[in-house]
Amino acid sequence: MRHAYTVEQVRSAEAALMAKLPPGTLMQRAATGLAVAVSNFLGRTYGANIVLLIGSGDNGGDALYAGARLARRGARVTAILLSEKVHAAGLEAFRLAGGRVDTSDALAGGRVGASDDLADADVVLDGIVGIGGRPGLRPDAEALVRRVEQHGVPIVAVDVPSGVDVDTGETPESHLNAALTVTFGTHKICHLVDPAATACGPVHLVDIGLDLPPAEVQSLQADDVRALYPVPHGESDKYSRGVLGLMVGSPQYPGAAVMATAGALAGPVGMVRYVGSSSVGQAVLAEYPEVVVGEGRVQAWAVGSGISTSGVDRDRFTRLIQQDDVPVIVDAGAIGALGTKHSARLVITPHAGELGQLLGVPRAEIEAGRLHYARTAAEERQLTVLLKGATTVVASPDGTTYVNPIATPWLATAGSGDVLAGLLGAFLASGLDEARAAALAAYLHAAAGTLASAAGPITAMSIAHALPAATRHLLSS
Image (tube, rainbow, N blue to C red; front, side, top):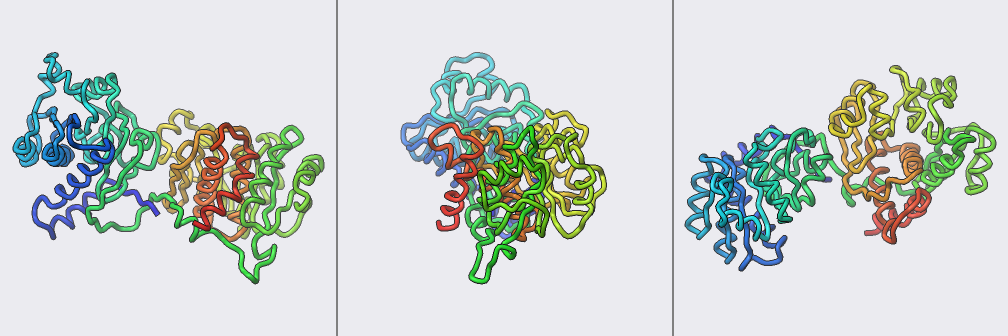
């Protein structure tokens, strides 16, 4: 499991560890890991041209000590200081190692040498603002960052990209976009949650020995998928494996039922029941004759895919969400039919627009604050939210949150969400709790999309057809 922590949690763990170690030990550990990561990023150290953008905090100290190490290994390293108050010991070590020092004022004045430092750089290290900074960049820092971007020089962020909101993953103000982020001790929330996660680029973690409590924000890894997946055993039968009921599709969108069924059958369930329009049921049977059409025993329901809000059978839907023994996935049009009261264990699977309609918030605000609004909906409505997007966020009423950052853009295709709803239903019917079922479904759905898109554009059915191979690969690796 990959865990992400708040600034307060990280600061507390750092303080506890620093009390047991000689002064400066943690910074030296961070600087060593940073220097190695930069060398690996460049593929060399000797002869490389490296520029450091240095702010006033410990983040700048990490960069200066790393710059000293790189300079001693033959790199040409220049530090551009954005504050009169920089880490004094780090600056002294940098100078003693042969590092060159410039100031942002000199650059702003147009001195040619300083301008060339950025234009000719192989990489720029962002040591402007660390985890204690507020969102946004000061004007002088923003001007430098924009100049770096104009020259097309890659930026390696030190701990976090300057300007992002570390605890929320939001980017309400100007910020930089990194080609790589090197973080220390643990992942922070901004490393996993968009839009800040996109600004981070790939994230490399340097272990500095922090002792941290359980994290509320986490991300499944392949080992977790293997541990959670409900693999059948010798005593399993179709009922013990789980039966999923599907109330999906409509005469206008019969394909949604076929795609949701495909997703469900590619999961761990023993049987799928379809309940709904007879014409849609026939379309499902034509593709999947193993499906049972009609009412009967189920361990979970998936409702709403391919049905408009006005097309939802309100009486039947109300009965489903008032029961307390069978979990229900609420997708697409059924999300708009939700009231404020329910007894069932619910999972909703909205995209940003649907969640915005549910909460009465503009879609753009949902996209800008994905973690906040997923958690808000989960707490206020007492249900689990799977907020779809480039970074899928799964939030449960107790605050537990999973983030899935591995999705491919090819998943943005019609019917992809129907496949996901069916797959999620399969995991719920097999007995997983709502949050883990949603996190597991999001992970495997993304893995299947990545596998299917290896040859180019994909359709929802190609995602469903890739699910068994993606699952087999993960379970056997």
